[in-house]
Amino acid sequence: MRSPFFSGLIYIALGITFTIFAIQQVISNDWGFFVYVLLIFATLDFGAGFRLIKLHFRIKHNSKK
Image 1 (tube, helix red, strand yellow):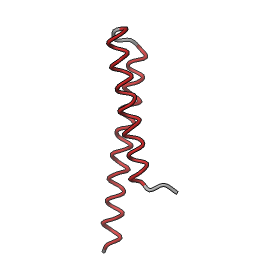
Image 2 (cartoon, helix red, strand yellow):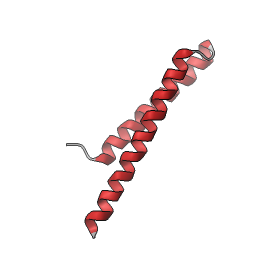
Image 3 (tube, helix red, strand yellow):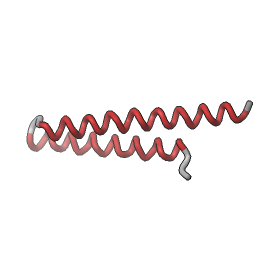
């Protein structure tokens, strides 16, 4: 079972990857539907990643009490 911290890092890495692909797509073909889809996926991945990392620290803090 993966820890929330590791899963959060994976989601953030996916968000970075989708953002890079979107930037490359804009440079080569201008703004299109596919770019918006990539940016939506990146936003969702960043949100999930940061939420999982926050959960990791909350669990870690509560286990010390």
